[in-house]
Length: 163
Image 1 (cartoon, rainbow, N blue to C red):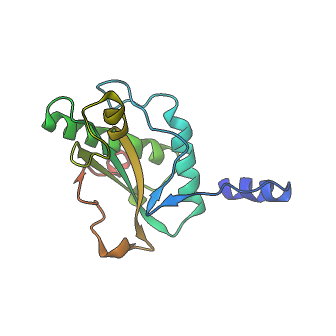
Image 2 (image 1 turned 30 degrees about the vertical axis):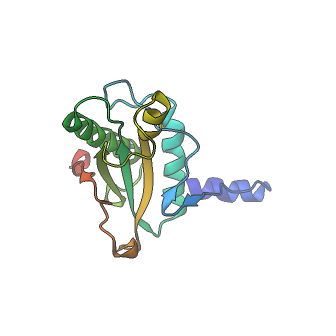
């Protein structure tokens, strides 16, 4: 369906979507947001999910995309880890519901282990609460020989909902 839409857009003179990477990470048009204290996605997240879906449909050679969820350091470390895993799995499940093959996705929680900003301000904590979409394998081969989990904790079986 998406390929048909791209063909239609090209025939109408429209440019296809151009995807930008930063290293191996897909630059997305906005954040994935969740209900507070929950793995339930908020409505604005679905625009980003649709964007990631389009990316994977346009790039079939990406055989594994890692969905990473990171947290700030507020609260208990174990609870933050568990919540990041649940949230990563929720994003993967949303992509699977949209037709992305579960075998192409890996949900990984990092909890508070990889901050990108100091956790001593609200702004810094907000930066640390993030979802990252990282290419982990191309044509079945892990990128750079690195572990596909990126050093985080795999949240569960991405295909469990389909079994």
